[in-house]
Length: 116
Image 1 (cartoon, rainbow, N blue to C red):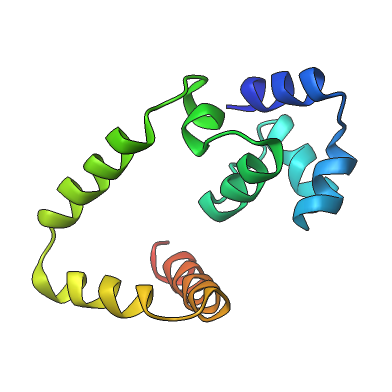
Image 2: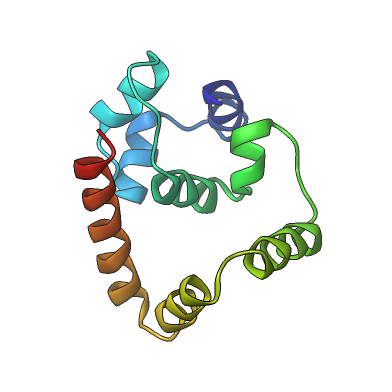
């Protein structure tokens, strides 16, 4: 994944420090990613993609994808999850961006705690 990120940086004449300032992701986190010491969280990858004017799909695969196709995949995946989870996703979608971010951070913390 890092190679696609680096390619975009080179094309745009940017450095990790520029990405760090724009996204709030620390230089250390970006450096750890480069060295293979860590994998970025999806929310950070999305921040990077937004800043670089690309898609999350491109950062992960190096290939642009069709947004309509991506939405179709999301819709299909949601149609195959249980109704209780669909209800949670619906409720989450009704919250403000900040409230959603807070809940997603809480889920990340809980996942890290209990997935070990």
